[in-house]
Image 1 (cartoon, rainbow, N blue to C red):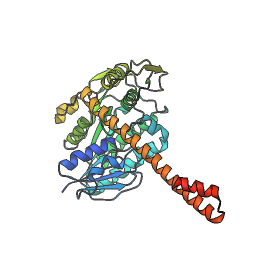
Image 2 (spheres, rainbow, N blue to C red):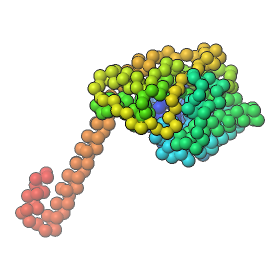
Image 3 (tube, one colour):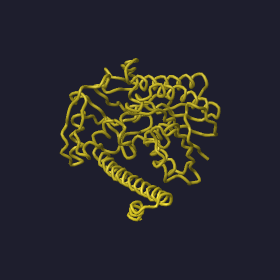
Length: 355
């Protein structure tokens, strides 16, 4: 019998895809989420399954259960989300990681930390191998996330050395795919949403900064392969296919079939100039490489965003209709009571018009 625990984002973007893969492999899954960025409907299709449990919980508080493996996907990952509440972001990555390591130590579970390529900061080495120590501004607007994850990695290594906790560390590079939040403020979601809505595609800076984007299915397969490997070293999980942000904007606009103009705004503080993973370690240690091309993954993501926009429009229309119906019933009842108290031809006529 195998239990897997997803911390913080079991109903989130990556966590929900991880749930899918593990459930389809026949495992028993406990998913924890505080719904800061996660959505219940991302795992709605598993609710009621005997091997699945969804728990509303925040990892800054202790959690007690018997598990074999823990996937610790803590912390919001998009800049608008983690900069909205930097103290909470730091606490999740420090206190939350201590709590999960404490659980792993007590029940002798293997624990995987979802770390990030952001620990490399604005790198001076390109591409970035795991041996690179990084170039991070410790007091910049992104530091709550960057430094939070660096501390989380340090905690993992300390518990491994001192308490013999069996650890895995995944340094995740930019990831996209279905179930992304449309308004999470990241490049992929921004560009797709702006293209679909015919709005200007916004680039910060001159667009020459580079990124490497991986499809979520590749990431999930990499996380599972790392969890089942024998290494305790940090491992990059990303797609080395590199594009400038300007190139990426044109690619998405073409795939959507949009005529949105591309506009440039002032560069954001501490935005990395380049980002590309060296995935030699993952390939050598457990044979992982990304399989899905960026274009194929983007087509799947664009279709998801189209459905999301339709869903949001439908929900908005339903809300308006329900409000109108409730307001109409309220007015009918008010006029009925007014007629009973002060009968008049005018109010009676108004009441009749509402029937």
